[in-house]
Image (cartoon, rainbow, N blue to C red; front, side, top):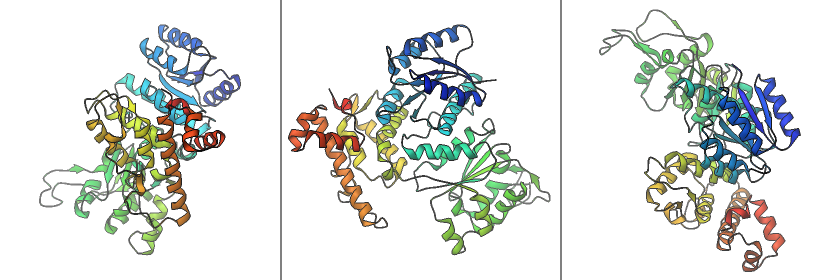
Length: 460
């Protein structure tokens, strides 16, 4: 069954590029040049029983804005997944359209791999939802970001997702390695099969071996019946080995055999069992160093690190913090029993000033805490309970980073924090803000552009 996609953009060249890319992948594409035409096409298709699976919507449209299109489609019962496109101020627009119910966001200029991955994910979500399939991707299973790193990541994911090549995701704790693994699975031919997660650090070696491989009756004292392990449960799908570096040495040889021959043996069994799985691993450690110290088998490293992916720490992608914060707010506000809509500029400034040593996971926890504390439609800086002065205020510096890198990071945080507070105080009035700052108006404007700040977001 071909995905049906409505492409909405007032630039004919963009429409033709997108049409060529998607039709090459087998999609059935319809085009609309403005918001009114998009609404009419979507309603007509729904009424005919051949509704669109995905609406790829440019945000800046004549006559009817992208925001209005999203509201109208939602109000009129159009079930298509809306993926918003924009090249201007992507962080603010992504956050705004997310609040309105957009499924995803892709930044212009469009990358083929990025576009294909997001449209495919939206199509599969709608298809599985219509079937009531429990394996439908979760609302949180989306890589949040608008920077160049996201496009590069999707380029790499696009290369490897359709294959069975083993992938290892590298990155500090809390950066979203499991999310990347789920994205690869959801975009692979195995997406309708199980995605099984095991933490190699969560269990001692004896229990982990049973957890992975299973056992037969009588294999040990308490083995009163046969039990399948996670390899068997993942058959046909993907097994995600989190914290692979913590896998005990005695189990590394058994994992190597699975990777080489697609066979394993349950504890106490006399026969090998075949298994059809794709393995994705994750680690926050230097695997080459572990090989040098004898903690990791070199032949296993060659087998698991065939196609490496690396995730940056949150401090290196600060422009994504407002969008991540909004995503977590929408994800968790119902659980907190709140109707909180967004953040004040001062709260965003405080979030962006932090170094977040726990990365995205720490930010998510902080947003959940703030939702409990906040009393009103907006989360303010006071609700975040963060130390004044940002990450440099009383916190230990990361001495593994070069001096100039740390220095520029502190300066950038100060500039952004200062600008956010200054513009918020003057309601986005650049001239008034420049007078108070004692700066030339053009220099202040250039500084706001450097930090990706949109004056409209501060205007009351």
